Length: 254
Image 1 (tube, rainbow, N blue to C red):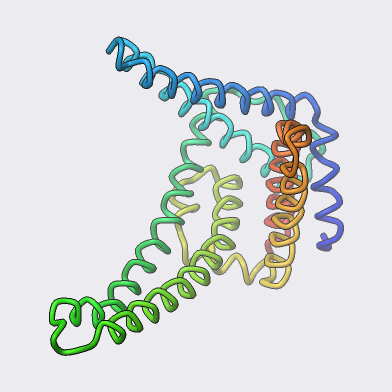
Image 2: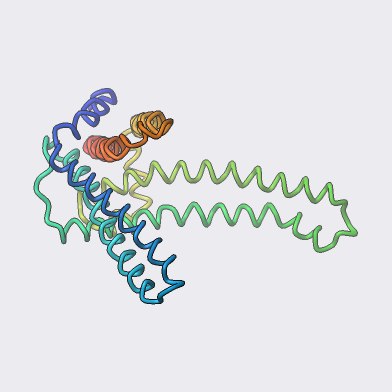
């Protein structure tokens, strides 16, 4: 599919799956209530330690709901892979397990760029750290310049690395949805190759457009309190659109 067709299909898809979208919106509200309840419980634990147990229970329930929501996202992605019009009825246990796998993928694909960023920071900051330990050798202005240079380099590297891994991560989602295999999803080398197989330009343009649309709409709605309430519907709608587009994109894998 062409990029324009993917975007059009993605934005239309949630409206054609109102029932499943409503369930996802309900899950969003449930997880918000659970987290709010946990915060209140921990605050009340000052008066009664029993509230700590309640807070922990609510956090556990929120985590389970989160895994279900993540699994739902993968189910939406699967419809794109198969070019299905509707989301089939899901089995809760299976969706929860799939969501757990997606969570692991998210963690791994964020840990690697984080490690790279930290390594770059410590390597570039080492001269400044050394001069701080030996202040007699260099002026404080020079030390400050070294730290500024280190932070600048680190921020640039971090932006590039996280951006690259974000695109590769979309391919990992496709691999997970297609094979249901965590091992395949965590095969970073093959995920990188998938970008070239689909078409690097197509992947970058499609994902960026979906993200920009998401940010613009949620940003506009967040400008006032009244519109912000609409984000309860808009955010899940755009989430469905993103993963639908991700699935359609990966379906073009040659």
